[in-house]
Image (cartoon, rainbow, N blue to C red):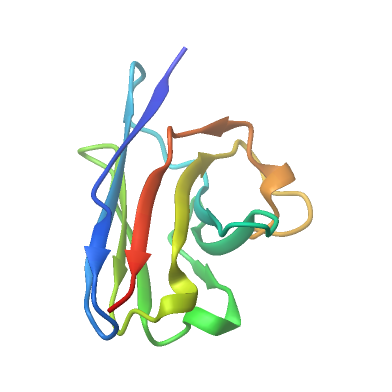
Length: 124
């Protein structure tokens, strides 16, 4: 079975940028949906961004214009470029893999496999 291995994250000041990556290992490259989710302390996991099999992207309203999801199919890796970071973006970020989306690309229940998570902290 494949694994999702995340890298990136860290601490930045408000307005800073970070890039997260999520590599799928243990299987041939695929074009199945991938998503980025985050969980802040005391809150439920929230869908942030997703990319469909045909490359269409989806974002939660609060990150539109600031975050960009992309994929490199050859490397079997998805990325999340985050700019203009705000303190409310703080949380543990997870990448997820799905086979088919039935309801919403930003619902965590649509995803069956997850990366290990990485901390993103935005503060002064």
